[in-house]
Image 1 (cartoon, one colour):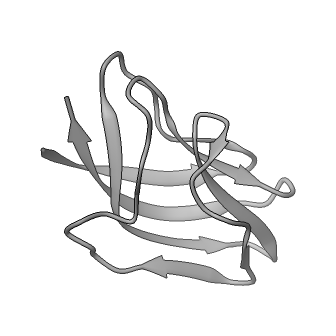
Image 2 (image 1 turned 120 degrees about the horizontal axis):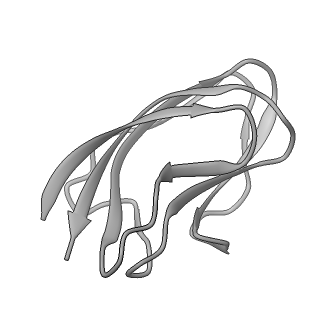
Amino acid sequence: MKITYAKVDLSDTGDIVAAAAGKKYRLLALYAISASAVNLTLRSNTTALSGVMPVAQGITLPFNPEGWMETVAGEALNALLSSAVQLSGFAVVGVIG
């Protein structure tokens, strides 16, 4: 598994890491702050990997060497936001494949 670092800079639903053929993404850590309250769901493309997480100010998933969640091969690691709110931070992602 190769480790990569991704910038989280979203003002609406979007990819944290874009899809790549044959690649899976394992979320190892995440830190993000929001401009105002928003609900966040982490997804493999459009399939939920997490439940809805209310983010009033920020969210931290500390480093987990086993990973918090993993996408399906060839799908993006995506953040679904409940409204158009700025979400900024970083993610540590393992790339498999």
